[in-house]
Image (tube, rainbow, N blue to C red; front, side, top):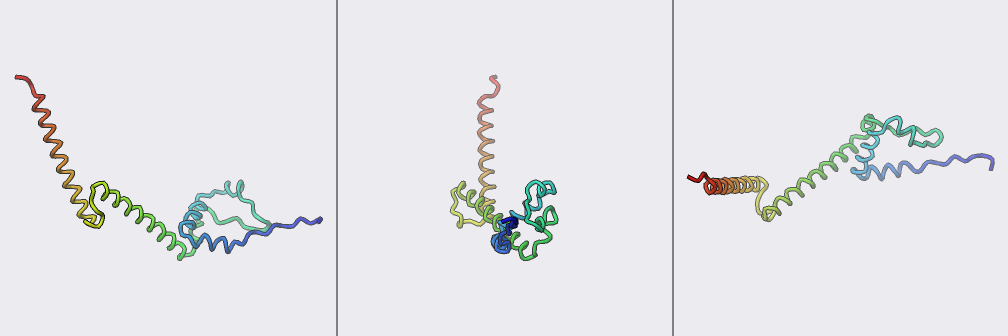
Length: 137
């Protein structure tokens, strides 16, 4: 065995299909490639013979098909929407209101009225304390 056998790269198509099947994984990969600098490629990239390095830098996202970019944006929107809904549920729980009993707009009005009542009560208590601790004539 005098000849050195070149290792073959893994099946990139299957790998990319797996990444593209998950919009979140695709977004993470593209963000990582976008942050990659020339130095990172020189220090961390170990290509096989004749293999080109991956696209990197801000240009990486431009090479992604529009359908994949749309899936990535939809995944990000779904994550934001889930976070938004979780925060509303927490707010409903804090106020002790069943989530489907009121709309979000009604909940905001409910919170505004609650804050007004609390602020008025605080002002009343502060006035009572000020009157009690008033100057002794």
